[in-house]
Length: 94
Image (cartoon, rainbow, N blue to C red):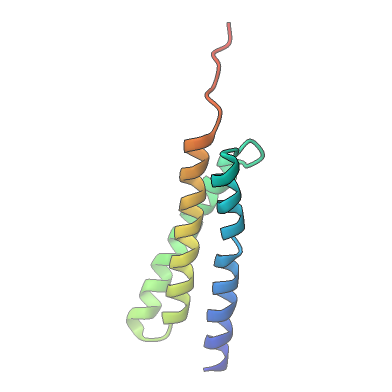
């Protein structure tokens, strides 16, 4: 029980930690310092962990992991969408 609570609190803190980045992107409409490739690599990793979290939750042992992993997936997906929205258009080389 204690470790599930620790995991839930830790996961919430990690997920909420992305919110200042998201707010900054929306306010500045700038993503020039962010790597789309890095975030795109994180998405399938978190997605695979999400599948594992679902299997644990079905067994009745991983609800906290499922909740926090889903939050992480949502915030990283949000960052990817914001990068795609606000990135500078590529200028073709002559």
